[in-house]
Image (cartoon, rainbow, N blue to C red; front, side, top):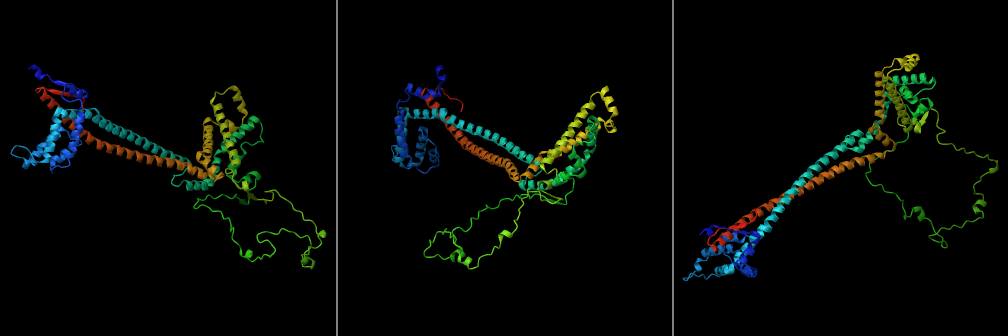
Length: 507
């Protein structure tokens, strides 16, 4: 009796082979199942109204154990058709009893249920789990990409506003703000010209050193810097002639207007006949659509009659002399026009000269700091004993302050904002280029925002798919466990109630 307690363990993947090998099922059980499925399809067309039957029929697949439940329900609903011999005259009951008997024949039901169980364990459940895992992984990837896109969007906006800050604008209306900055440029240059007066001690120090070392008292260093210190950001005319102009005729600036409508070219009234042309008459012998180019060399009768113009005696008239003058040579004195009407810091040539002189002064002061930092030798001490007081009285701290003032003025004139303003001043169309470049960064941020929205929609779709798959997985797992229990109980009855275990992976 001990063998009655020994369990029978069956591998799930080998379940069908195990049933066929032990002759529980026929090898051609599938043909019998096809006949049974046809009868089930016919029997389902005529079913009584019952809630339990409706629940059974709503399942995805009806098998033998479902048919048993249907027969038990029909015994109650078709009880009135039962005769004294215990048989039912109802066709419904006959159909389902025939189906059950066909299932029992050669244990066809056992092969079908085992096939369903193996398919669920091997394919259906792992497939649903993979789909759910794929949805979860997709959600994680999309969430990570959303964060990356959000960081990228913030970075692009930060770049946009940083670029706007370099130009000195807020970025609300790039084009108008840049044009407004150009209008403020003359006042900025005037302030820079006024700030050049701070460098007077440095210029005097440089001049004294040059005169002492090079022994050239007549030559002046940094002449344009001196001029701006004395006269401010004056015109090129005043710098060139030394005379302040009475009239300043600045070059006509090109106005940049925002295009509102596409400009159309007026080609005139081609093909429209004017009233004057309609009054012209064509002689019968002339060509109506042609032009008579014949030129008569004979004198006209009107000229012969004395109605012609009397040109007089052309020989007695003195010849008229026409003198061609070059452009700009007839400009009156005291009038500045063209490039001469620009200020020194507006004109690129004079502005570059001014920056060069500032760099020259900075280099001199920096080199002088290095010399003053070194230990004084006998030669330098003896050399500067004869130097003027302005050289002997300078300390390292004073020269460092001079260098800082020079560098500050250079930074004001050569910063990125001023460079762009000078380019806009030289070419007003540069405004459109800058505005387009800045708008591209803003458009990229907007596109990344749209991409983030698409990612969010895809993530929501993956989440919705996961919500749809999870109930299906729970349902198929529940039914698979029921099939496992039914198969184990049925096989246990065939082996005198020995315990039967279907070794399936955890699902």
